[in-house]
Image (cartoon, rainbow, N blue to C red; front, side, top):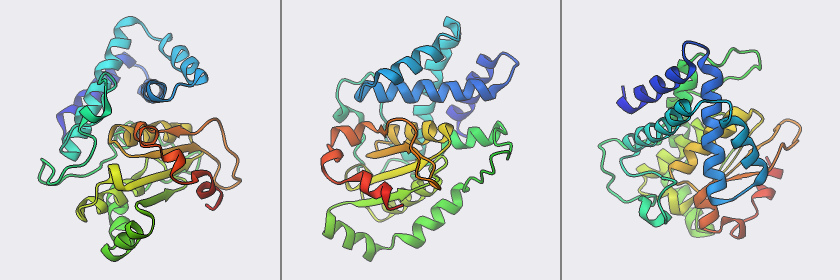
Length: 258
């Protein structure tokens, strides 16, 4: 077990102080997602959400939330074998976000750390009828869908690989596709963009956080994919903003065609 994963779980448990970890974990994801978003793409409504959530906790608990964010970063770094995004770095170029081959660890993978915590905490009670894709299934789907010839044709035709996932959950299928690109020697940070949506706010926070920290250009939208109804503003990851993906392709058109 990843020691940083264990420390993250322990910190959430400490903040809960013997009570439910469900609300604390949700608040952690809400705080971290809004902090990332407003650091690179300020939105007053999200700033208000951040402040409303933080003020529920004492100073010691807020400090533990900060520790938890560090442990999450380190857990993701152990997965991918290189540095992930840090909010206190003055320039994105210093973060090591652009995939360099070969990666440091022997078996680099984009893994769904937050989704695993969600499962370990037994947060999916089944009342909403949600079924989350297991990580290994996402990896299999990526390998079956993205063969080398298809990827090369896409890169030659439009210059990047577009990964679309509606009802994305925590992003297992997206991470599976990104893992396939890694195995093909493709840098997901520079040669891929993700368009993802889900109706569950919890999924939006978790998918957005991890795509942001891994340095993936992505737009994540809270959307009822059955009706097409959208809730709130889109969440743009830092690399999506920095690399000007808003002007590279019409992501709204891609949502419309889901």
